[in-house]
Amino acid sequence: MGLKDEAIELHRNLETVEAALKKLTDLTDQLQKEYNLAKRGSPFDRYDKLKGMIKACVEGLNSLSSSQDQGRKVPKGLAAAARAFSDAQEKLDAHMTIKKKYSGMSKSEVKQACDKMKTQIEKNETRTKAIEQLIKQLHVSYEQSKQHMPRQRYQDMKTMVKTVVYDKAVTD
Image 1 (cartoon, rainbow, N blue to C red):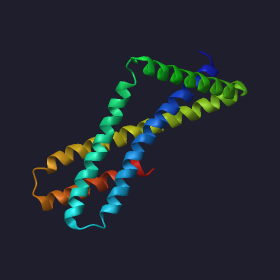
Image 2 (cartoon, rainbow, N blue to C red):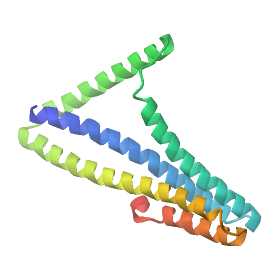
Image 3 (spheres, rainbow, N blue to C red):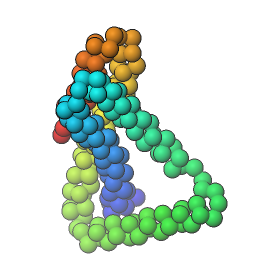
Image 4 (cartoon, rainbow, N blue to C red):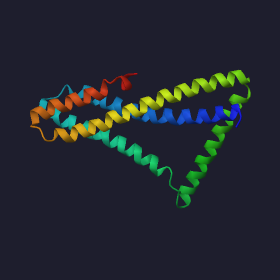
């Protein structure tokens, strides 16, 4: 595999990793937005809103995981086959665009671009794993908080949400 082929592959990997990170940061951004809005309500409303926003964030992570698994399945039916063909055509067009980008570059420029993409992929994968772990821990803590009395549970849920929203992996 040549240097330009490696650059094309890295470019695709970077796009995939960035898309996954974007979906997770959208979840945490929504959690932060809802948390800030919930501060305005009465304590009883805030309690219910905290429960809802935690559940929504965890369900969002679960749906992202299941949608990735469904993306690997073979389409059935004419509409699904047409959609798959359209997706394949879009991927081919994107591949040709990427190939043109790197074909006009010198070897040193391509090497430099490859190094930069490798670094970016590693950084994004680390951040993605950290955010996934935060949301999974949010779920575990939420389930454990069900054993507490409502007043303590409310404080626990506030702490849980703050832990996710203000974590360095989320705010970077």
